[in-house]
Every structure is written in C-alpha cells, then in structure tokens.
Length: 232
Image (cartoon, rainbow, N blue to C red):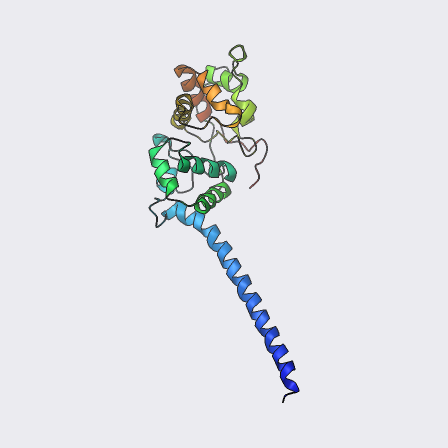
C-alpha cells in the first residue's frame, strides 16, 4: 500500500490540476461573454447605477432619433465612441443629460457600450431630397473656402462623409439638427476641439447660414462605407 501511494497521489494531483485548469478556462470564458453582454445590456436596459437605456434616445438599433437631434451610434468606431463617453464623464463635453449617463458608467462599461455599437450595422440611408451638388452646403463640404482658411469637410471625414480611421467619424445618417447642434457646440467651446483643434477652428469660420447649409446637405447624403476602415 505504501508503494502505491505516491502513484495514486500523482494521479490524484494530475486529475486535480486538469479540473482546476478546466474551471479557470470556463470562468474566463464566462467573464469574457459577460463583458461582451454588458455592452448590449446597458445599451438596451441601462444599469443598476442609474444609467438609462441608451436605446431610449438613440434607437433600438443605434440609428438615432432625428427629430430630437440624438445621433446615430451604430457602426461608428469603438475608439471614437469610447472617447466621447469619456469626454462626457470628465466634463470635456458639456451636455447635462449625457454627462449624467456617462458618469453612471464605469470605464469598462463605457468601453463595452462603445464596442457594442461599433459592431452594429450602420443604418441604411437612402439619398434624401436635399441641396444639389452646386449648393452652398455641397461646396463647403467638398471644397471648403480656402481664401478664409476653411478646409473641406471631406478632407477629414472622407468622400461622401463616410468617415476616416478612428478619429474622424462618419457623418452620413446623422440628422440636420444633430449636425447643427454640434457645430454650434464647437463654436461655444462646449465640445473638445479634436485633433489639432481643427473643429473649433472650422466652426469659428462658419456663419449661421453656413451651418444650416452644411447640416442640410450632410443629412441628405446616402450611406457610404468608411474611406479607411477603423480598427475594431
């Protein structure tokens, strides 16, 4: 019996090690699945810390609510979305409603929500009946106004406003009201100016009529793929 004990002990420890490894793998898998599910759960149902469901304002599929100026989130880059939520949480973006929502989310929650919306398909938007290719809004979007030092929107947001990389979001499928509100927010310093302070400079060079012309033109653009696909 004493001779067999070491062998039995080794077999027992091997089995125990196998069980422990399997348990850890299952736990890790469950944790990852829960982390993935949290983004969807928060977006659709809110959380126990007081954050309401994102879908209440941004739509069940992240398509936005045009009449209220709530933006579409579906299909925008995860890094961009997470950065905006962080900016609301730390006060860099001034919006009482979104600040309260973002502060009710942990940094992990904000990242999970961003990943959830980034994974959704962008809304399918048919071309609207809007200003033509030679309208003031179209000319500003595609050509800018270089004598005033105003670059074209398409230089950063891509041809057709489909977005470029992780920094410059798609503008298609955003409402005219949302575009107007954001340009005015940059004029007032209520939004971070963005890379190289570009957006505060751009917005400062726009008149009220420029803003309305741009918003009307952009909101009628058809959906288009990103000019350069963002990393997930």
